[in-house]
Length: 375
Ligand SMILES: Cc1ncc(C[n+]2csc(CCOP(=O)(O)OP(=O)(O)O)c2C)c(N)n1
Image (tube, rainbow, N blue to C red; front, side, top):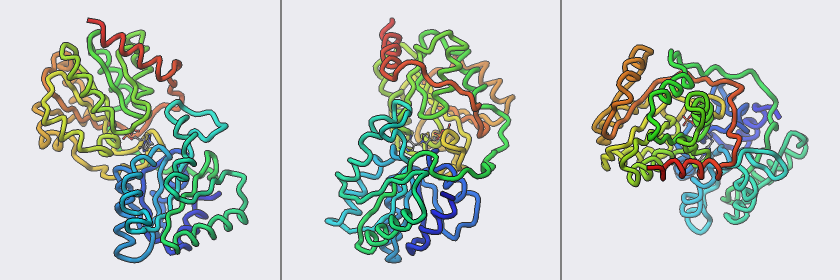
């Protein structure tokens, strides 16, 4: 299916507002809505729950439903506003969901997608939201039939989910999301790892940052036992790092966060800043984008994470934009003490041949715990 065709169908439903969090399964559609004039008002939001809020506000002020796009891992973020605001027993807000189907049963995918893939359709059953699954073999006639059902659901003030499998969209020329930063994220991660001690612990965020941490750790330290890879649960790495830091006061805990992930649960920074944990270094690798799923911009690409950290109460804050600023940070990195926040502007790119963890997520956790328990 062409991304344009989906946008046309959306408009034919009388929808004017499109909002969501990007997903790799929906990459071509996300590229299209980010780089072309679609005739739809488009908002990328910090998390999928926020999109439900916009959909409710749109409907309350226009009587027209909005469309929300997301990866199925984002369903969890929508469950509270869907059940407590949009549901027919509350305000009965019609919403059209477009959901990228990671971990679809019968397909091979990463560990963090397996269970969610298995229960995606069951969750919609449970939420009493009608849905249809489409893939690359869905014909135009079948798609027209599906959109008939969607129209009917929305007219009855109900939600409807169109679940889209991998490779459904026709390929299109990649959108250009480059940001001009001179620092390469993988290089930054590698240099930081070189300056860690054997007692330091690293907690990395969801997406390619974790894959780079894994690979660079193996290259630099010959193992990755010091690293906990938060492969799923986008936005929660900083709180995992906080939990570890509080219970491991003799070790430095270094959180390698993404800007999209930090933004998704920005309240975490307010909490961590207030706690003033002495052994936590929170690093935000800011490429202004969701690089791991295709490089689409975040909800607030120009958000000032370092300034926000100061306001949140982090006592020590660094903002790194250039290679020379990064070199001077690297010189002092080993001796950094006290709760610290470091925002590093990095390019919006990664290597195509990044490795993926060879062991299971559970094996990663067990190896990491061995390392934590080591005196
Ligand atoms: C709740 C949730 N929504 C969406 C995703 C899909 N997803 C995985 S990584 C990622 C982008 C993360 O962006 P950022 O933290 O800025 O890191 P980057 O990829 O740019 O390194 C997204 C949207 C997800 N895993 N979980």
